[in-house]
Image 1 (cartoon, one colour):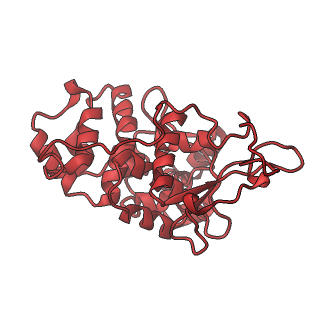
Image 2: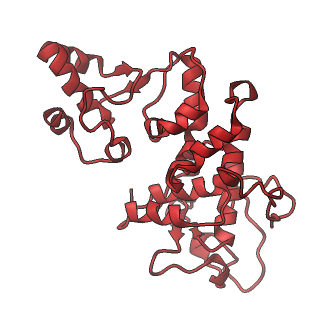
Length: 300
């Protein structure tokens, strides 16, 4: 993860919420030294959308000059490798419109000067485009809607929330949403469906205003899998594992820790233990790939 990349994504204006979410998750996969190579399946899963919808948003990001996609064919296997995504903040960035020379290595264009037949295996986008017109007209908000509390982003959150589960006061929910920072708004939209599903599995009503006011979206962003009872399934490779071992040690001693290690999983209603001093820093801890189980337990 590159904090510089995700911070850059948050500052981009004029994008629809879903397109901004795609950009944010792309930047979340960016490595300053190696680049950005997420698979389509993984990126679609992160963004909670179909591959077809994902490709539409990627096209928009490319047309606006924020990203460029590079596709490469493995010279040995002749198989297409994961797409590389380049970003406008990178020093060597060139927009897709400025790339005029076809490259046999990237699978675009013909090797000779003649026009080649398109190859379905190596096409620029292998997912069917649901639109017949490759250039989508910008969606115009109804008069006054963009200036309403919460703005157009809130419209997406509100419309995606099942009508029977919405709060009585749209205005109160919109004001709560409007009070969030830009990244908080994007995360709220991205994790709303997971939150609702979890609450339903727990036989509880998914409440929009508490979800926003308590910033519960931080609990679900990058969270462990959820089981059929709505519990977080925490396993040894998860960053939450060490923190929970520390909590179990405090409450049940070393026998409790050893028993948990043998089970290889912990089921909990909360992602982090309530007695963890760093529980407020959910996002920071969740994205840390350097903390080991031992270090986490000692710190806890």
